[in-house]
Image (cartoon, rainbow, N blue to C red):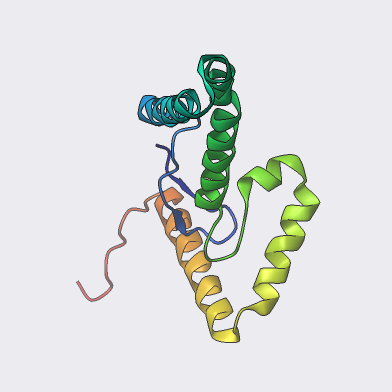
Length: 140
């Protein structure tokens, strides 16, 4: 699981799922295929059941596709609609998508996002600043 911060609005993005299917998912696909083969064996005979073993591949493909959709949805920022996977493929389309989302937001939410961004930038500037030695007060 990877965590990251949205580069546009600096809000935290939830943990991302693993990039591939887990062993548990493969076992579930195997069980679904087994049930399918068993039902075909009982209904049509052993030769059709032997061919039904190949059903593992399309079921696996569908499971991978659904898993990819979940990863894509989890990677997208909920605040500004930034999609890092789309950004890697087409930067202009990702920028248009964020601009469309930001235009649709209320003025109050845009101001809140802007305040949050400036607060984070001010914190970074303050942490990167060189500490100065305190000057003596003229009153002392």
